[in-house]
Length: 632
Image (tube, rainbow, N blue to C red; front, side):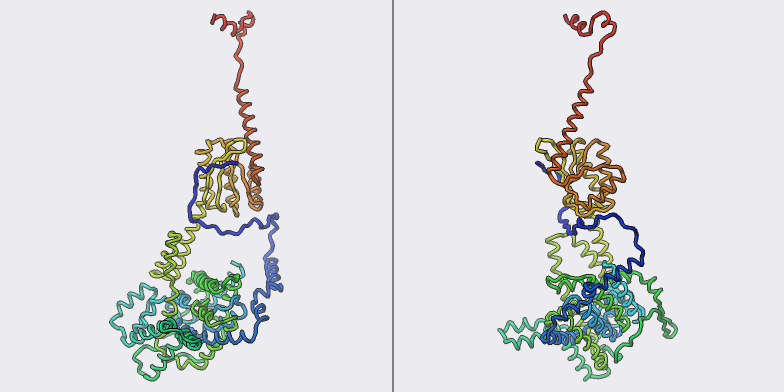
């Protein structure tokens, strides 16, 4: 067969990466199962030996664990634990919660990930992102409300697993300002309005802290300019760089503990000592301060903060799975297992007064750089957090808030990837629209609105591309020289794309097919088709049948053909399916032969004999004779 390209109805830069569902079961529909049967089946499958081991990854890697690996994990866990303490104190400050809640939120995730984590390096705990999004829902609420959100986040994330499915707000601390604000715009307005109250001592401490942290980040590169050093010096420089947060915080704490009270800068203040009490999350809470009463309940939280049940778990999972992919190398990521781990960590953490937690990028990167070889390093990290709660909390009193803010800023500022804008601009500029929408909405409206805005913008783009498949129209000839129209669809057929597909096929049949050429719809790239697509194809066949124009469906996958045939049978529409070019050639040749026979029959039936006059026939004179005589 020869094909000549006529026209392409397509939108460029559309990439399809869909699994081929052709292997899906095509068995007849079974009777509906009862809920109890479904639950029983899920439980049985979950506790099969293979699934049980998969749900507890520790059973896999612990068999190959060696003493040398324990030393590496101990060093990594110790390094990470010392770095985590100042960071989580700063994260609690971001969430506008008492500093002890940062510590309360940091040790449960470390222990849970040992048993349920599917990668080596991930560290689960409070992050700046989750702190900002939590603050958007807990503004004006007591810290206990964050604990309830942690529990609800865990439940939602766990359900997702079973179904298989802010720098600027630290500026006010550096400036020594204290005011209430919600969001970037209010923060800017608050800083401007209160700029006259700036405490220059806090500014000095903040600038020195930022400068010291940046110097320690670059210390290896700085010393490298002065020549080569031995491995011991490199190790010392690496240790100074990785422990920069705890080093700067310790130095600042020592200095201001020597200065004593009254302090010239804002300090963290009293931090309750000891482990948080093990108790259920507060499903109801009421507290009276003077003439005001603060109260909430599980019901009111579900009614008034419904979006939190979607936004916080979704954001936590997105952040966690992004980090997991970044540090997993070529290993396969079990997203369902990571969801399970996050859900369990948040639920158990809520019994220890934790705020919502997820994977922490900066601390995971440090864990990776420190040489961790398994999740067991989390045992050391969690133990250090508990030790800090029991022993070190009195020393936290003299930590300057501006220093903690500096730690948070330096932890997140290098996570902003502006180079991605260049890559998007060079590869596909339209993708800058969802990026810009998300960035601006997060900055000026709120992080939760930014996430939802970006989700909606991406969804619109996906629907747009889904509704505009690339369709190529060509004119072809069989070996015998019979013409046909070839229509190639480049992706799966779903509800959004059917109206456009129908319009394009009809237009091609009219414009290039002259409403008479047979149509061949090439379905080799259609890997998925829903019921709406089956109904749409059926409607197309009906329309062409009314026009006496035949349609062939070429190379349709068996699973899709089964769906289409069911709908066509219901609508009493017959389709001609061709599996390969040989079958298509035979069908086209048969069609053209049948069409030629019809045309020949039509010509014969249209040819009529000249009528004879009865009177003339009786006289023996025919019309022919009459005409001949007249001509003579």
